[in-house]
Figure 1 (spheres, rainbow, N blue to C red):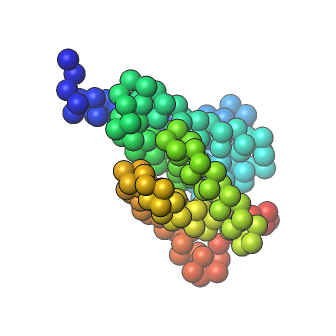
Figure 2: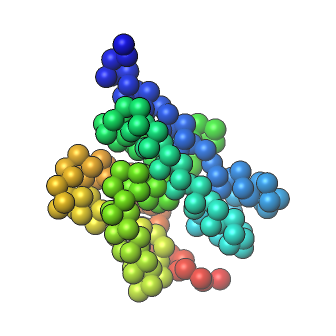
Figure 3: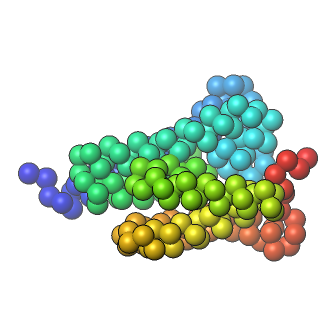
Length: 198
């Protein structure tokens, strides 16, 4: 019989391996565009893929990055229960941020954040997306929209009594802020690029 500790480690590892699949790099390379890590922010996420001018690839990257988080959570939850699902969510998020295949230089985690939310408590994913969209319409800053939505998410989870999930997403939010530290500096300086800006 496998111990709960071993189950937890396995869930974290499975989540990490799912999360570390770099859809942005894979899709742009297959499409023959330049190396995604050599343009824009150097990130492997959908926002940077959009800078290649390929909206379809950006959408596919967003979907792939979200679904890898959702699948990791669902699979771990099916075999190991809610605690395993949360550990898989953490693993998937870390895998995307620090993928072993890309020398631990990955994306900023927004799509995976949404994906694991869908797997763990989908109403919170809707709240995240609504807040992101509203903030983006008002400010036209993608990074600010993600940061605002990620602040609200753990509060929303706590308000509805999901204390363990609120704690998990508080950690993921802190990690997201860390990954957006350069964006935050540019926002403070007024030099952050806006959505749709050339």
